[in-house]
Length: 224
Image (cartoon, rainbow, N blue to C red; front, side):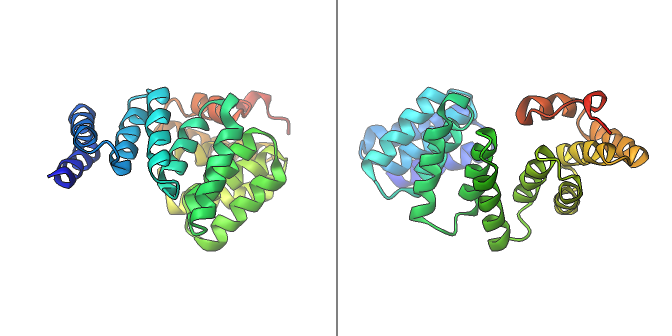
């Protein structure tokens, strides 16, 4: 009965019904207060609906119930990483997730992103190289390695990584946009304009997203 409620909650969440998923996971917890999986699952719903404090509380409870629960560490780190004041906590959680499962490439990429936000370029590059070495077609890893190269002024390698990211996901507006910035800074204005126009066609607010999330300058501020 309890497993079926939890499974139903997972289905609701996958179908975007957060309220029903929340109800099922809460019921599962009420029936079995030591159900680490249900706490982790409810934490994911809280994260989905932008309630980070509640999400972290549930992930923390899941970890208390099962200290070897790698997914709960990863999920808690993912929420913490959205807060620049909690980046060290996020890195610690991603590190624990990796220690528990060294094949967790998502944890390597997420830890790399946290390192990028802390300006720890060497650590970020090491994690991204590890992730790509293990999973060469991991689009997210190529995107963030492209961001890292762009931030350090290596436009040639940035374009190469964005090329791969776009090959893997042609709808990645952010990769198209930042590839355009890299091309523009490298003097390729025509292809830069084409990339940024294609990016804005896919996502009209891509310029704002890139600047807020990755701290990149708008085209007018990129020096040739």
